[in-house]
Length: 417
Figure 1 (tube, helix red, strand yellow):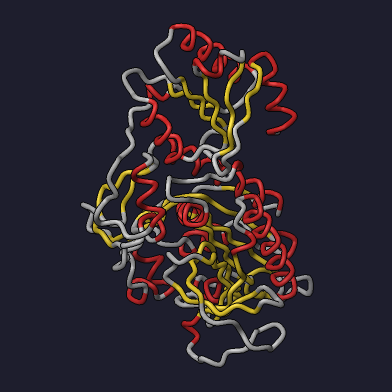
Figure 2: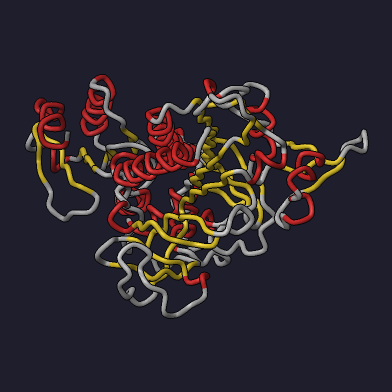
């Protein structure tokens, strides 16, 4: 991509109404745009990050044998009444159609997925089953001061599993935990992310959250350093022990909830009378689990962890591009060689954004490069061409290297990877 063709621009000033570092940097760097409180547009660079997060999640969910679908966001009132959540779920956006039928925008999708699966499952032979979607959710949040960490509309992966027994649900639940760990490792946030015991809220008595430690977090968690698990402060007692080993927990630290998992058991299948015929001929309620990940929250959490005073430092797996090529100076030979390097990188299959902007000074180009946070910077300048080379540097390191232009792709394959 040519940066001159990118319709968005970077911002020099920090948005006054954004308190989280991730929101400030993502807005300034041109990844997102704020429409209103808790409502954001994902711009070209931001959408590339979201799409890479989505790809990682999609692969891991399918590795569990889960099938991907897409459910409607508009859910009839009668479905919410069946589960009792039309009145009890206070974050629902409610609306009425011209036919006077009332709906709620999907805040979660148990009210859709249970009657859907009920149509297709009748016997133990049809179980277990897992399906998921990646779709917008809508919640009428009162607190929207943390940028994309807490919004009224957000993209979410929600996975639902259906089982013939508690044992089978427990086994799948553990598989999901491992899949989530693989996702967090790929995003480079695993070392700061803890499986956390929390209140189940509207779903169940207890649940498990995944909390990523950062000062920007809205939650406080107490960590067991031995087991690498935690307890959410909302559970109440100041003397809570580790729920695995029983030892005392660390002092509370701030964290962001990026995912959660619930053993719903029979809560929603009972509401819809969703039963199956077991091997012995008896009719039993289907057991159920649900597992959510907020994609924008993941994006925001990554930025909260990976940034410095100059801007974002994207981990390579989800960076919008791997290389930021910068042409410095107006020398025709520099422009010519930069074009050659750009086309060579593209031909070799590298993801590259090329700052070919005219009438933009060296300082501004370098500041924008650091702000946007692409993992590798490549500069073509009069200085580098004196060595028939380009200048290359990692975003998070000071060391510069000069690489011969004719050997650049080989260097990128062998050294950068």
